[in-house]
Image 1: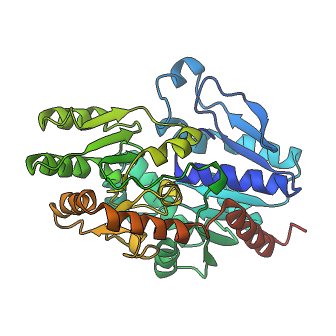
Image 2 (image 1 turned 90 degrees about the vertical axis):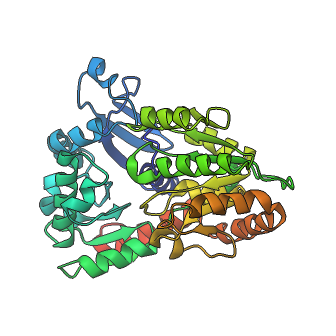
Length: 378
């Protein structure tokens, strides 16, 4: 529940919206922090956290470490079966990010629900680009089982149009697939005021390879060599943190680039408007919630010409760069820094576009899919 990822943000938002609309909603997940309670009610949702390891060990694997989530898939199945009976669950909304929460219970329980997808990568070699060998093997196996229909879900929902298209192309079973985009909380977002100057850059996310932080650091090196003034704040944590810091020091960027701990979601919503440009250099994404939130905060955005961005966003409000050209990211950032009037206009257009997305919309559409797929909700 506290994991700072897009799939988890969506899970919390949809579950709480369903609870507010009068449904009894229960959530089973891993305990990822020693401070978390095993059972509590959060925004109307009854949350049961499964203890995956002793607290003394859990402290050595803080969020966003993958191990607690991975262990959940191995040891949660008796708890899931117990609570499905105890709570008399009529329908299931599973989350696959990157593995299905039901795990090998899918063939038995999948027919009672739908699964939400955040990202898929393909075969083992593609998963291996972003995960360790064991996680890559399990992720690739989970993807294959899903697309073959073996997990038995009645329907699949994705958070982005490109991922729905991918599933439709790769499936080997007649799976029902629907794209339902992520949402935002407009009322909780501070909106950036146009300043006539673009200088402060920001990125928030896990420090893992597919998020592209090393490409961003290299772009900053090029900006500094070209004499372009800027500052960049990176918020997050993950296995690449020490390497990113070493690159900052190696390139002499410590005066311009700073690393900070991950922000809570509430902190992020309030801090986004402090910055002038949000840079997203990810190699692959579903539909990043933080990108929608940056646009809603009227912060200009820089994104790669990759399918996850180009299938939803327009050059009218997004500064695109060519990820194949190693200098393109630096050049696009430099253009944004040097053209504040045009970038401010794009930011205003981006906010108008993104206001169509809300968590209420996402929750309503997901509930309709669950109702149609299972016939268990009235």
